[in-house]
Image 1 (cartoon, rainbow, N blue to C red):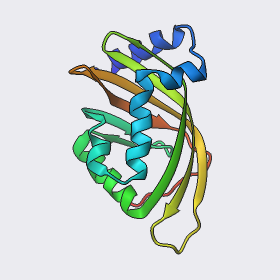
Image 2 (cartoon, rainbow, N blue to C red):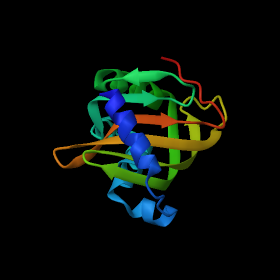
Image 3 (cartoon, rainbow, N blue to C red):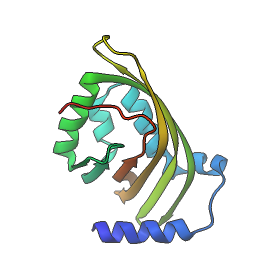
Length: 154
């Protein structure tokens, strides 16, 4: 399955790039935009509703989390430790059949819940590989780069 997703991603990357304005208006950018809103509101169930059951999340530190049960545990840990204000800008996206992608840039202010530390300002690039399930684009794989690492204790 992951080879199929990777092949679709490579084919989509070869497609003519969309302008950032067009990319942001695409339905393929919606899961990323919704993710940022739901993450900021700390609505774990709403965040998880954006993922396929076998989704893979690759954090900016390179760690990998696979499947909704593991995502729930990891995200719950992160949300218990931090509040975040992510801002995403979709740069390009495309689809082929039931697979698609959205990538762009982000900035984020991550504030530790325990007020003993200062907020962390970070930013970088995100990439989501999407799979259409029952007519809805869901996140199958998600990756982040980060200019400043945000430590997560599991």
